[in-house]
Image 1 (cartoon, helix red, strand yellow):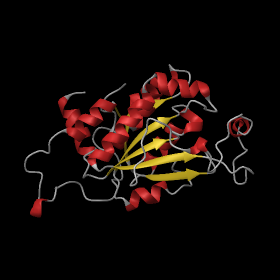
Image 2 (image 1 turned 30 degrees about the horizontal axis):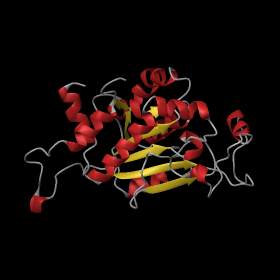
Image 3 (image 1 turned 30 degrees about the vertical axis):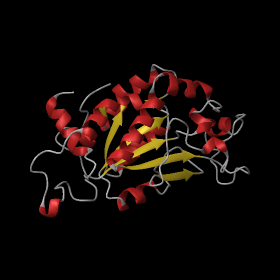
Length: 249
C-alpha cells in the first residue's frame, strides 16, 4: 500500500472517526473445532483468518473501537427460519445445529468478547445487516466506516459488504481476515468482486493505523480530536464506489 493510500485508510478508520469492526459468523458451530462446516472451519484456521480476526478484535478493544459480532442461529423448532434456498435446507440437516443458547452460537476462540462488544443474533436470511439491528446500531454509534471480517467469503461476507455499501457506509475488508471454500475462492472473490466496492487492506495495515501516533494539529478545543462529523457518508469518494480499492489482496 502506498503512502497516500495508507493515509486515506488511516483517516477512514481512525478510532475517533466513526469506525466499527464487524465480525461475521465467527461462532463455534461455524469456525470452531466441532463446526457444522468442517471445511470452512479448517480454511478459517489454516489460512490465519480466524487468528487475524482475533488480533483485530483485541486491537479494537485497546483503541476503543466498537466491535459488533454478527451471529447466525436458529430456534430448535425452526420457526422463522428460511427454507427458500438449498443452503437453508442443507443447514437444517447438518449434525451440528446453530441453536439459540447453545455452545455452537458462542463466539469462537481465540476471539475474546469484551463487555462493551455488541452481539447481534439473526434467525433468518443470509446477511448480517438486512433485517437485523446492525444498521440501526451503526447509525446510533455514529459509524461512517465499517470493517468487515469473518466468514464466509462465499455468502455472508459479500452480503454484509454489499448491504453496507448500499446503506451508505464506507467498507474496509482486511483480506487476510476473511475465509471461504475452496481456499482459492477467497482471493478470487476479493479481487473480482469485493475490491470493486470496498477498500481491501490487511490486518497488519489496520493495526498499524490504530497504533500510529496522532498527527500534530489534529486536536481542537479542549483537546478534542478534530475528525469527520458523526453520521454516515452517502456516496463514494474520488477513489471510486465506497472509497474504492486502496489495495488488492
